[in-house]
Image 1 (cartoon, rainbow, N blue to C red):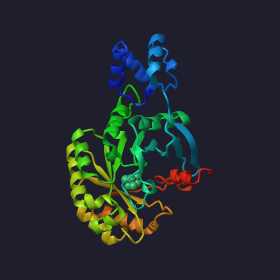
Image 2 (image 1 turned 60 degrees about the vertical axis):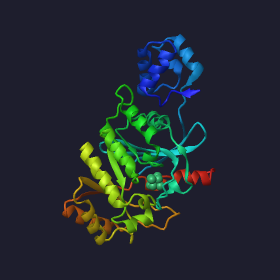
Image 3 (image 1 turned 120 degrees about the horizontal axis):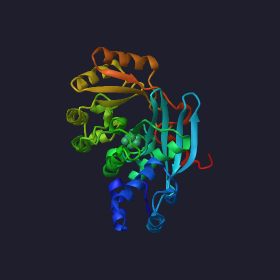
Image 4 (image 1 turned 180 degrees about the horizontal axis):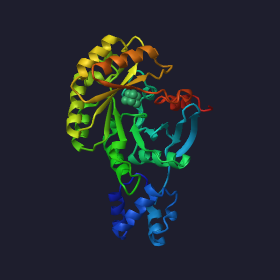
Length: 345
Ligand code: SF4
């Protein structure tokens, strides 16, 4: 049976037509799924009983299940472990800011990109998530806490540009005003730097925010942290980001995990200045989330402030990310790994 969750309005219109119903019936169903968020096809009470019966023969409405929720009482960050139809487990994180809730969702189960600081990649990739499994992370968490999220970041487990078609379908679906209705400027896609796909995304002219995991000012440091850099070196990545900025008019954010003794010296800041001086960007400095499988250690707070001040002085805007959810293993992939390795927890 096909799950209705994840289908686009056009796909539902085709289903309605195939079942001998007018197109507007599909629009009603679309609103029931993504607007009213019903759990059962029979709750769609402005759709005729006959059509609901026909639908139920071939389609189902199955949400992913909440397995576990951890809450950091210091900052209200929630971490969710979710169970999929095939019993795979994914995680997503909800963060509370003054302007609303931001949900960080996963796009793959595991990841094959091999970034040395990331728990999501340690066991490799299991499979891509479907667009339905992505959008359902929003529906399920919003229902669970009775909230509405104002921003989505594709920054959980997985590399979104390695699951390009489903991610694109997700973005269009989430943006549809008849459903979730989240503006494209409230959606951020974070990539480790798959250069050809950045060009492709720019040409879609989607107006979503692009965030790029840079984490180093040169190839020699970045090669040690992120295997993708050997395929697409830093210069090619920055060129692709410039193309994105020119094509969309959107500023790019570079994520930069501050690692003691690795990438946090003033010389590194100067190299960054040289590399990024002619691109409209923001650098988000992140005290790295330490994981036991990696020897990387978080930079001292003073060092992060000095690094930030230097870049700000030379005209490159920076922010220092607040450390949210530190008491609940909120870094990408940590909790899922803990549970898989120790299911009794
Ligand atoms: S940081 Fe992102 S791209 Fe890199 S391994 Fe982790 S999930 Fe994959």
